[in-house]
Image (cartoon, rainbow, N blue to C red):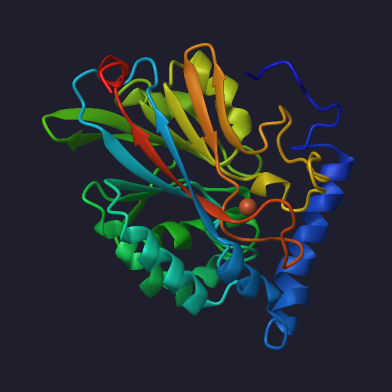
Length: 297
Ligand SMILES: [Fe+2]
């Protein structure tokens, strides 16, 4: 399904990327904060257009005896200038009514500065009420301003645990699986060796940038959950994204490469401009069933 297409401009480096990133940082930190008091179209759009995608997956290498696992993937929340807390509150409370076993938040929880998270903590706290908890990995915007360590501490205070090149074993029913998170690919310091050191390859990997997929496959990761692309955020009907954030064109949806699977969420928030077109905001509810059990369904 994937692995052949590759864009000729690397979206993670080069002069165009540096220009785009710095423009993004300037508007995110210094321009829009002064406009948000009178102009907040994105929260209006989010209330109208947010949707839930559902998918059923049976990754090769998933623990055979594990009970079905329901993971709620929320990516790219982008707390800050474009997002009203009350809009996010309605969405998070409706998502938790789905009773996921585990909540996975795959990066970019802020837009331009780590302190943007502060007024959203009470709203995000219910996510950690999932029986197997809520888990986070860093995205590139978490490094735009302030201290990413503040994000980790603040999330930890509401029970959301950040996995930065780290993995944990999670017990589910009578079985268990390994959950890992890798640091951001562009502005962080991803360290596979460190992430793999405690438990080997995680069964479930949180990786903000979907371009980690082929490295994850090479390390034996059955399933990777990503965001970052926003599905292009702005795309013409039946067309590809205007600004593509994945070098391997992993823009949105489910992908398979050899025995490894990837889910890329369009995410919830917005950056650069307070709008989406052709790439509506979403969360993804993923039911994971061992391959041996899925045949019986
Ligand atoms: Fe993002």
